[in-house]
Image (cartoon, rainbow, N blue to C red; front, top):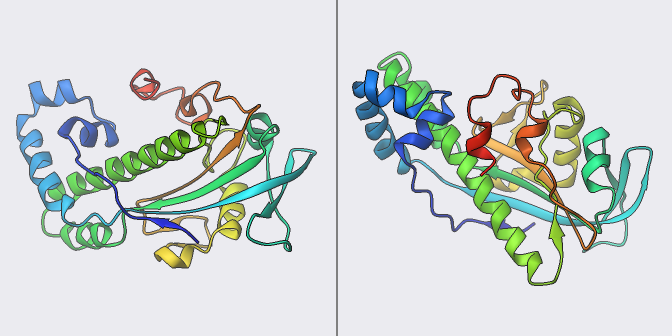
Length: 235
């Protein structure tokens, strides 16, 4: 399966603080020492990032009862599917489905684990670096594919990932892992549907002439009611 490995991962302090649920302006005014810690963590973490995107395209063969029937372009056998209310809402008119798995690798995870007993503040800052990095990677990947299909006169849907309202982790995660050979980038799924390495993100996008990217991912996030940064991510 195709793997993309050329990504520009230049993180800012504000991105890392937001990834930890903090307000950058508040932190800068009240806890300037945490800004310095975050700057140090970015320098440390940058060298540990190994961003990879594994992906595959599937042709949509049918849609019934909130279930998309899929077939791989490179194969004339084997049936696959995606299902759920959110899938039906956004992907029913898609001609193709792009399935992606983004990861920054395990080196940062390992460093965080080893640092927690030594310097928990730096470890938490590194965790924020990882969260911001995988988010940036997913955004860059989505933009990359959106620009590619535009050249063919096609549109993309809003990116969807398991855990959004209408597509549970229990339903979506095993479906995505059945569509990708995730071992190629050393990502695995636990019995509780968590990905290892932790800083990994799986998602799907619909492609087609009649597909529209109405709404934003934030509208279907389970944190919609309490997230401070919906306006930021909607830009």
